[in-house]
Image (cartoon, rainbow over all chains, first blue to last red; front, top):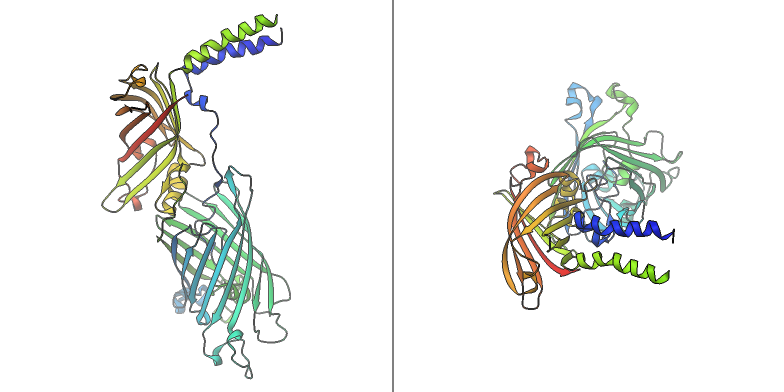
Length: 309
Length: 184
């Protein structure tokens, strides 16, 4: 009998408590479907490389990327503002997990295309996935005249395949808190043709990126591509970029400093010539870093039918 | 001994049975809002409103899951959650108050009743007193539907709208609610 007493006391109290307050508690916990983490990064690129974000299903993202010349060019070069390389691209969300994109860069007059698929999605509620895992497969093709392709020697035959390169990237990332997101993005760049037999066709890199939100609409980004040793000639550097994302409704403006001029994988991973160590030295020692920006503007082309209720 | 316990439990269970009699609930209530400006129309819908209404006392409660609002544009939805409503921190909006103008008895007969709803609305963690009009309809089959329309000002709930998009978001957002209640 004694063991019943607390139970009875509890039962006595329960109805009176319910009458007063919290009618909704009568319904108990509501079930929610899987709720995927969103807004880990402001846009689908951190700076040059891909972030773990995709454009949403049915959304077209028009991207303009611009890199000025080396900032150590001095006043004569307007601190780099006279130079320019540009990439214009279109990305589209085929589903919430699959996005595809194409682009055209002035750097080596290159056309590139990619597909990015989210294998796993970090989850806030309804499932327990702690990370987002995505794969990006991309390819690029230079359209330069044969005598200008940098990796063509005098005796090279200009096969179409000699102009191509591929890149595969694995993105493992997590939105650690409302303000901090981190990702590791190792990968390999395959160049169908390289300048000399000393250069490997496949270049492996282990890279990472992160962002810290400074306010609701401004975030600070860092991105570093570490190419494993002894794969590239001495004059090439690892790509390091820092920048700000500024979001205003349908646009995201990304302003940054980077030592890379190209905006597709082969260019910024295997052909970065700027050296942060030269940031403030004379231009004759080589380029340091440059100022650049990306602008993203989204258009909703197709409104997917989202499940209701 | 055993019999005593059973009687005791039965007696204890009585208030439960009595108080549960005139309670109505829904988990699939509909809420939509509309912001209209010359620059842009913004519309979002949500079919996951939960509500419990005790017709005897007139007390009513609503809870709305912010993340369940669906927009035409995915980016709007992301910004709504991330920048304006901060739904990771404040996942729900709620209302707690009373419905006056219809009795528990009337709810058992077909008819349409104008009601007054008053209480406290909580959006973005900020409480505001609210009074609005609504309609409760009981159809021939006994199904109960409650509808109401009212306006909410983002400024009242500490939802800051930056200058760049001030012209795109209305100062007063029109809200429509429609709930099909079933007996608990």
